[in-house]
Image (spheres, rainbow, N blue to C red):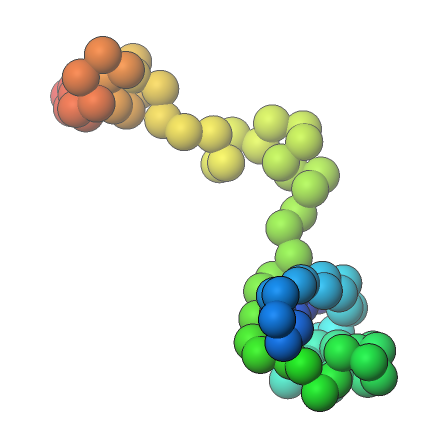
Amino acid sequence: MDYQVTIRYGKKTMRYLSLAVEAPDAPTALRKAADEIPEEVISEVDIVELRKAPDYDKTLHGNEDSSPPREEDGGPDRRTGSAHLTR
């Protein structure tokens, strides 16, 4: 599985480091990411975030599941923001 690890670091100014990690599970992904943190960043790490990496193939090719519901399918009315239920 692909994971994205984002590390916030810095003393005066916060900066971000993003790492792509392939691992069978979250704990292994964190261990692999820890091994990739540059020495100069280690002492300044503030927050570490782990997420499943987005599947860009699905997103780029218009996967129906990632599309917002359309008004005619019961999604929100663009004019009012309210949903219409049809039976």
